[in-house]
Length: 268
Image (cartoon, rainbow, N blue to C red; front, side):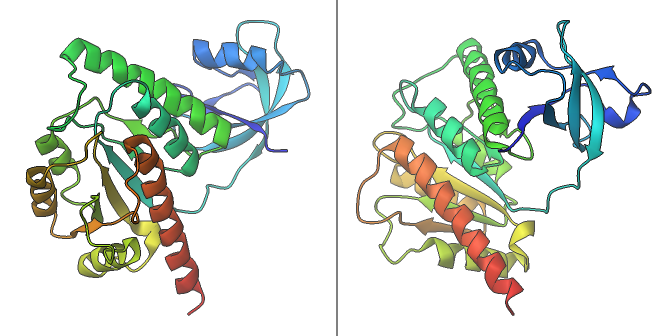
């Protein structure tokens, strides 16, 4: 059984002087730890503010925060590719669904962006509130699934800003229902990595673009393809997927293909 995982924003475990010390969880995480009924003797894994990894034993949990001792310093996980999902704003809780499940898969960052066909329009206050909600969902999903880090979640942005953030990506994969069926993810990744000179998939930073309900317009596709010299159209198959389905399927396929490329490289 895997251990419960917690992320610390403002505590560096290596700097603690006492053998037993408080684990300075956020208020929400402390409540979550109480719901889990963590008891003395149980172990948890912790990723601290220095991105260092520890297994800690609960010594006491009578106050607001658990008191712990270090059981062992864990090895840093092996490097993995970074997949950044650029998700078109969609109505309802669809973006929440995408962030939750794509975090479980291992997506490293989310760039929600407003599209011509986006039904949702957010002012600055609502955008900030949405982002806070999405960040809480990403953190919860990362804790549940044992991810090495909490994904970065940006506030909703315009297409131009998202393009700037992905201009230097190893590869940029634009998922479009009008892409040729022969526009495969594997070919797009190989093209980007080859043109960028990245041999190890673990060193790749790949952007994946999914549009909102109604999809991306031709103008938006042209802007995306022109913002990065390693950008490619890709198809997710003959079926037209809902935006919340595509936002999960696309990064899953990209992560799978990067893993396959890594295994193939090891076998050489």
